[in-house]
Image (tube, rainbow, N blue to C red; front, side):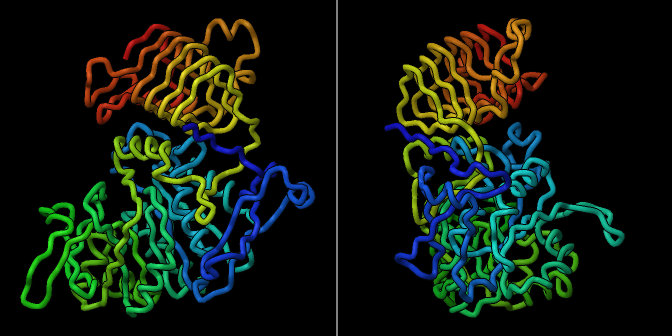
Length: 477
């Protein structure tokens, strides 16, 4: 099976994908479907606005967080945060959570960024800040900054929210949903909000029923038979088994893995961060345990859907591999995934054999063979090259623009994959130059390693060629 990613359909700058209204099925969800790029209406009306159904859920705002420097995605995070890492041939990781917000009819979104945030801030601003949202809807990027009251950077997600309480208090939202910006999943946030309202909870935490692939950084919840959280185990303590049932005097309790997704009432958040816990830096390790100790009602929302932890190279790699076999469906009309429209030509395929792969826009694929791989935008693969079970993030520039003279062509390895090269179980970052007859196969089965010049690294047994690296002809890695 070949999965080809459709090219972006909007030719305009600083605008999101064009939208058509879909009035069918569930009225409480925002129903959006992509318009055909060949539609005459698109040609006549190049700007079509996002429209959100008026509902009580407009009183909810989302707060998105990047991850910090402790994430294990280096070297992909050498010059970018995790949310800005290219994913799935044409997207960024942050697009997943922003798309979940849009598909859940949440249009008030704050993105608090700090670590290596230049690329992430640029992507969010170019993609979502000028999409024709109404007066009450927006996505606002809030970068870490120093002030006369506080000269330090964000110390954690709770500290970041506290720094901007003056702004969040002015927002008309009565609840906030706090979201990590680097996991892969599809969730209708209206479900967790509904549970939060029905139980009149102060805080509701989304949790995974299964231990598989959970992010230990968010801890383990002990939940009673009423789905109330009674205890939160931290990463530093010995973890109980997820899904284990414990018999206590008061109730049967079960343990679940926290997803780091919190719904919190605005008045509770302000009181906790400003009055009760003015020193707290993290929701996971300080605010949530503090709320439990104060006797607040903390509810658990159990999530059964697909979810992938992006806190490691292996997790990122596996998520990309699963995107080629439709475990994460990019073609879901009810929950589309949005990203920056690019003015790129369609991918050109010349006598290539492609199976079980996702191919981005603007690629040039000559007489090569691609199997079980993700090929990012603008990738060029030359004759007889073989790509297997790999992630190619693509290129920001076309080779024709870069190499304008014969002299440059002779002295510089072109961006892309050279003739006769063989790549298996690798991640090739953007703008990498792979010469001719290069073998990237981890021939010694190394699990961890790197070169001093950091041109490539091996993490979790996966070879990573770093951004803009150059691998000479006939190299074997």
